[in-house]
Length: 216
Image (tube, rainbow, N blue to C red):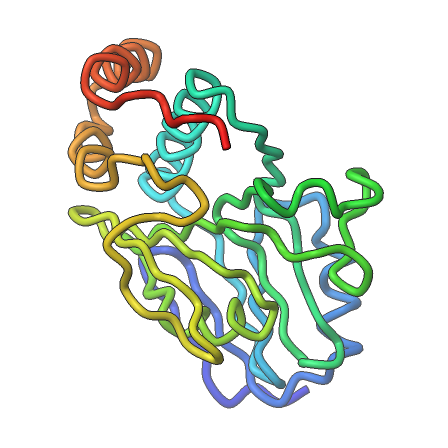
């Protein structure tokens, strides 16, 4: 394994080049119980430990998705930062958050989701406040994840997969009634220091402002 680049950022990021798949696979096992994100793209391996602001945004997005699916009666299965990988594509990553909705019925065993036999998640969430997830979008596309939500600290953007790339979309397909712009406004209040109050406020706003989707 040769180290062609080592970059330290606020989020404690290290990039290695010319890393064989077998070494990536071994590192996944070595660090499986540690808060370390490994992103692998055809020999380039990024290792990063997230900062608290990254985790704050990630958890608040999750809470809002929980509220929407609970209040609207939508089946959803959260798989968090599960490692998704494809040896054939030589790519792998851990999303910040990840969800099955329409594809949930196709997963055979929730204790071990495997893209070799299971469908991809319907939705992934990326928080871009300490790193740029643009380099990860090619990996998401190779893994056939149809939709990514990306938050940069101000704007929550919906990206839909079109072939090998993602394009901005005006609304989510995974959760069509999700109030994307309003979610960003709530996320920017991350420093309130009371997730219960913030979640309750979002739920109250949602029930008053967004009609429950019709069952289809």
